[in-house]
Length: 74
Image (tube, rainbow, N blue to C red; front, top):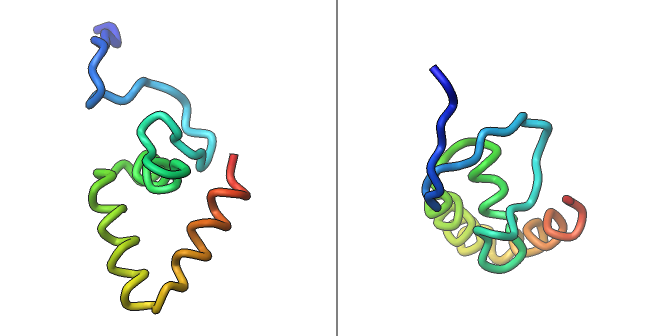
């Protein structure tokens, strides 16, 4: 069978996984959550909810980690 894909926002393109990359097309602020969701192949809403819960529990520490990932990652 061939790898036939139709244009749809829910379908991710077939590409070789090289490593973590920001996803600025699906991202809201810097594309960190969307990049993490792509890397681990999970829903981006779950990743965003984990960031919010972690930020509240960690008294804002994850905000600094989010900014660091956004500035360091390509």
